[in-house]
Length: 209
Image 1 (tube, rainbow, N blue to C red):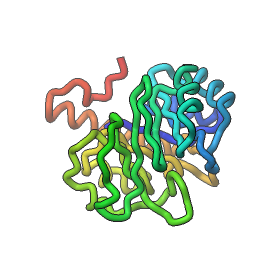
Image 2: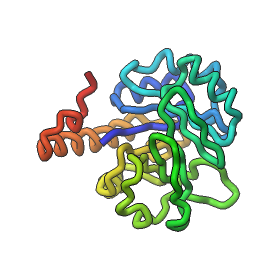
Image 3: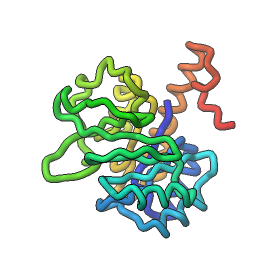
Image 4: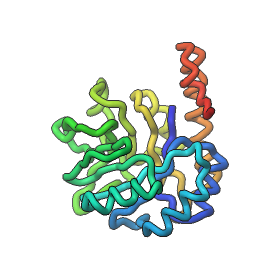
């Protein structure tokens, strides 16, 4: 099971995900409490373990703005919230905020991402949605977000996501917590190890080579 920690804002945050050896690190470029500038993201990317893939989070930003960040080597994946999704020279993620099954729509992106909906907000909300709505979803490998923390991560992994996506669930007083990141990273690595033993697939061991 792969793990993405989203909403990195400081070098201390980068140090936390480096120590935990997560799979993906998210930089928020959209208007949000976790928004950072392109210049800050460039500095954070330079400090990020090169084995960790960086993801840019956008909410209907213009194509040229996103493409410039991709071409600048700051992100390796682009995550689209809102109404727009673009073809990019990198892998892409389309986020869906789920209220009913009708909110799950086709996408041309490489991955889907399922998150909760809260009226009056844009992007991730930090709350949960009814996970039963995505049971059996197989159209795309998907990231699962929304209210996940150490108390429910095992239940989240049972839904079969490609990656668990956490932001506020590993925070204390609005700041990333190394202890909490290490806890969820451990659970993901144990899950992958068990999967490797069960299936014989070395990719499930969490190998980073």
